Each structure stands twice: as structure tokens, then as C-alpha cells.
Image (cartoon, rainbow, N blue to C red; front, top):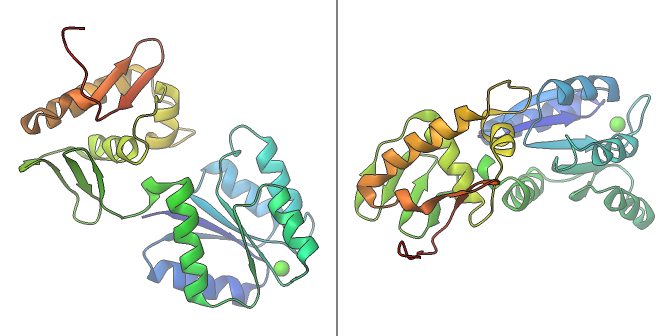
Length: 233
Ligand code: CA
């Protein structure tokens, strides 16, 4: 399930979008102005924002530009919505770093398809798609994890941690990044909590012979890999 903030001042449109998104299983928060949007994003980073161009006060374009300049919100997936259809506006929207652009009126199917495409590219951990890395398989919709033929039992935190690592394999994640992405930003937990959950995750994976896929990268963090490394090295 993904958290989406819909920033749109026309309440009829906002409500319609919200109904469709909720129906598709997303968690939706509405914001009718730039100020309200800033408060929502400030309180908790969502997985994606739908951002209307024309808002009372600050424009959606200015908001997008501001978010792209802030390290905390730099990676926030943004789809811009607008009644404008001029090519120049579209370019301006993409220039400030919007991930996609939708011109009103748009169909619900098109909106859903664009949201899925942006999430798949930018925040795959927010989707319910089953993921496979090597012999490991994780299915968010059934909450099942297996290593080869072996069904693995994971606690909720270990499940989220593994889901994040599997949707971003072969990359090194620092403890701070994992806290942000898996536990949520604004959550004040010590970094050694990550070490504790990684240790538990390895224990959960060991019946499937997959514990070695979670590597400790000294001085950097953790990585999920399917590269088999020689233990003798
Ligand atoms: Ca508007």
C-alpha cells in the first residue's frame, strides 16, 4: 500500500481522485492549498504526490521547485496535474523535476497507470508487486516470503526491511537511509536498531540458505546481493 498526497483546490476533482485511489488500495490525504501541502509533506513524506499546477497562493510549479531543492524531499515522486495543455507548460513542469505530467481532463485508468509507472520507477517498495532476487521471493499481497522451496517466517519490521532491500538490490544503503525509508523519516530511532533488525532478518532467512545475501559493507551500511562471494577470499 502506498501513501499519496493529492494537492488540488477543486474539491470535486480532489474527491473523485481520492475515491479512485482508495478503491485501488492507496492511502490518500487531501491538501487544498500550498500551505496545507507543506504541512502534510512536513509531517510525513508520502510515497507520491499528485500536484495541481494552479493553486491559491503558491503555484504547484513553485512547490515542486522548492521540494526538489530540499534534500529531504528531493526524491519525492511528483505527478503534476493541470488544465493547461500547452507544450511550454509541460516542459516547465518536467524542468522543475516532476516525474510525469497529466493534462485535465484525464481518465481514471490513465491516472492509475501513470501512478503505477512512477511508483515502479521511483518507489517500488510502495507497490504490492511480488519481487524476486535470486532464490528469494517476497509477495506483499500475501505477506509470504520464500527462499527456494522453503517458506520463511518474518516479523513485520524484517518484512518491510527485506522488501525495501529486494526492491533496491545490489545497492549499499546506509543505516540512516534505511531508517528513513523503512521506518519513516521523522522517526527517531538509533542507528544500531537497524543492526539489530538486520541480524534478526538474517536469522529469518537462514532456513532458506539466504542469510548470506544480506551483506554488511564496512563503513557504509548494508546491501542485498545475489552475487556469490567466496568465503575463502
Ligand atoms: Ca486548481
